[in-house]
Length: 408
Image: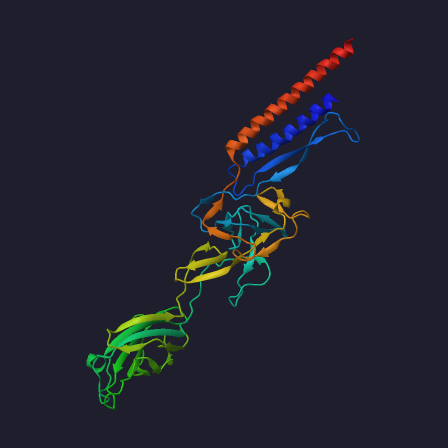
């Protein structure tokens, strides 16, 4: 009986040594969660007031506390702050990980360093997120040009500028025929950054004391600065007695760029333009067009949005990552590769985007470190070694006693 008791202690100490050794081996593993061997005593069944007959392994408990965050400088890396697990696809089956070290494969698909595609909600052609989980692919090629269709131009017009009589003929070459001028960029369908020069004329009111209106002339110009056609009377901006714009916006300018690009219909929105005793200024410009651009990089924000940037200043969202939570995360089954499988003990995955529901947020450019404490593990290692040696001594003594008895 003593031999069996010592053997059970030896096996238990070996289990503890194996557990501690695995934790020590993974002290530098990204997002590793340390484990602890739990033991229970054994007694003969239906017998009381007798010594126990040894120990056995009750189970292996995981410590799910978060590890410290480590800055990596890689914008594709992400650490989960709070609860949740990244979802990856392993030959079509879902697995889960806290390891946020990601990369792009040759086709632009976001994946783990071991090549498992990361799951989330991809952005569809209309710019909305898909409703079902799937892989996320980033456009690492060029973004085609988009022709300008809408221009927002907010002006601060000076009521103190000279009022020009209606008998004066506008001439862009004669600065006495207009008060102010400014230009806006208008991209054509080929991505050329053409210009439209705007000339602003404060008209002399026909009624004494009336608030003057302003005529806006538009002169399209090629990217090289060559005028296209003649200036066009784009619109007349009318104001209230308090200087608030009352009419004249929006206004449309049709342009034939003459360079092989498609014709443009430019809509000018002058909302917010004001008239007052102020210096002339362009208070705001918006432009929905842009030139073509090449891929410059991708980052992941706190809400899991995957945002790619391009050399033309555009930012495009490829989708949003998903995080899985479980009723009993301690029940997840760890497997090789910093991965977990769900089990009947963990329950089914509850999926949300970062920052919603039960899901934590993300820190882009960071990774979660292992939560294994080397110092405490070394203490446990010594304890298990001592237990192992003690039980070995008991077994050796029992063997010696058995040998002596057999020789009598």
